[in-house]
Length: 49
Length: 344
Image (cartoon, rainbow over all chains, first blue to last red; front, top):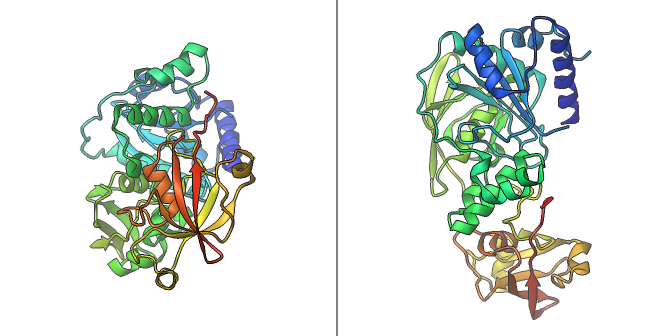
């Protein structure tokens, strides 16, 4: 599990460093962004590290 | 960097609005309804909150048996396909929020503590227990294990079977099949299947499945084995499950016959006793003891072991009288259970 979280965490860090990608931390904002962009939502629930 | 932004998953995620939620305070847990004992769980959905698929799920052995980058990448790719051509949207589930559970509110919101997923699941069950709606077969055994019915997945390939054994093999499933529908509902991921399996009425005797084989859809009927819903509960942080700190194994039919015990009874042999049982003076069981009756009962419609009988028929904190066979002697032994408390 820790390995997957590490992988996803690193992936998220990579996304965060990319100007095109921002990981949101607010669900309502994600819905708004999806409506504005037409993109689907990739929603992750995880226990707080 | 194990999964850089130029990796297949990274490229797919750029086409999404990614959001990570670690506090459940305002989340609609009616819409996002899943086994709260998952450490991590994903949904792919659109702006209208139509859920295309889930990704996550676990088994008895580990929280990450069914999680890996390859299958997550497959799910992310399929999610984009579905977004381009959405299937009909199902009816939206009734909204539900953590603040609807007063005991959860008292012990989290009002103390400014994080509303963690497992606490939601536990307090939902405590409220069910309080109002008499707790169905232990459903709410304690929340996520049946696909391996119980002989479905062994080639996990990196999503829902492609590595092997079919037991009930799945008897139904005609084969290695290389891809699970496509469960009881008529399209499934894309292990989480989709486990969720659907978990919703199966516990009285069900069979499940209708569709597999993709050689480009064709094949419909199968799988006969469900006894206690198909059973899965290990020890990893769960559950306040509604009595704790008694021993483990057992069912007796064989020959064992029961030799001991004069009913063939359909739940008599079982103790295989492990935790030192906690001694410390807390819960019981005096020893490894090798046979529990032949509990509170005078030897047969139960759902339980095949003494531990399962206790889980299903006792509330945490309740006591029981065991009939124990040890060294040819029959012993009446009191047992106490306790209720675990998880940061409450």
